[in-house]
Image (cartoon, rainbow, N blue to C red; front, side, top):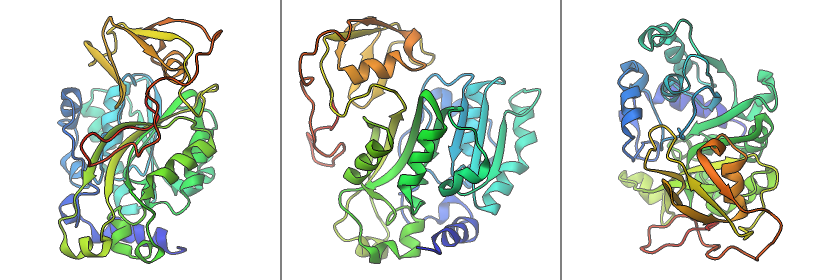
Length: 350
C-alpha cells in the first residue's frame, strides 16, 4: 500500500484527462441535481467541469455563511458550487494532492470571483493528503461542514481520515459526503490493482465496516441520504470484480453529543416550518426522514438532536423532553442500508 498515493496522483493527474477517460461509472454522478445546483453549475468554467470525478451530490441544504472543507477537491467543481451557495461571507477550502488538478482549480479562481460578482474570492485550495491533514495546520473544531465526493475510498487509512474530520468539525457540524461501498470485503489482490483502485472500486469499504469505523471515531448514527447501484460496463473490470456489488452512497455524519447507538423513543416530535431555501414544501433529513411542511412527525431521540442541535434548529418546532424513555423506536433495523433488491430495508431507521 505504500505506493498507493503516488498511483492515485498518476491516475488522476496523467492517466485521466477528462471524465470521459473513466472505465466505469463508479466516479460518475448518477442523480440529477436540483435546479439551484444546475444554476450554479452553469457559472463554472468548462475546464473545471471536464475534470470532475464524483459519484454523488455532496451538497446539503442550508449552507449560507458556513465554513466548509472539501477533501479531495480535484479541479474544484464542488468548491465553486459551494462558493456560490455559502455567499460572500462564507468560506470554502479545498484540499487535494494532485498537482494537475490543483492547477486547474487555482487557474480559475479570478474567473469565478468575477462570475459570482464577489469583491474577493471565498475559495482557496491547499495541496495536501487527506490522510495527513495535521500537516495543513487546520484549526480543530473550526468547520461547520466537511464534504467529499468519491475520494475517501482512495484513502488507505480511512479510519484516520474520519477521525480527523471529527476533530475538525464544530459541535453540531456534519460531514456530508458521497462515496463507493461494497456488499462484502474486497480481497488484498483486488486492492493491489491500480486501475480498480483508481476507478474507486477496490478501495471501497464494505458497508458494515464503514458503519463500525464511523461509530468508533465518534459519528454514532450514520445516516444514508441517497444510494445508487454501480454498474460495471467494462468487461475486463467486471470479470475482475466477480460477484461483488458496489453502491454509490451519500452519507451524513453528525458531530453531536448525546447521540445513541440505537434509535430510542422519548415521545418526541417535530414540525417543519417550510423555511429552508429550496425546500419550501418539505425537507429530507435522510432517505427515511421526510418532513412535510406543517405536519407533526414523531421522531427518535437521535433525529430530534440532528434537528435541534444543528443549523436546522430554527426551521423546526420541537415537542417533548428527555424525561421519559419508551424503549427502542419502532421500525429500527439492522439490514444493509442500501440494496438492489426490491423492498430492501434501511438500517438506523426510525
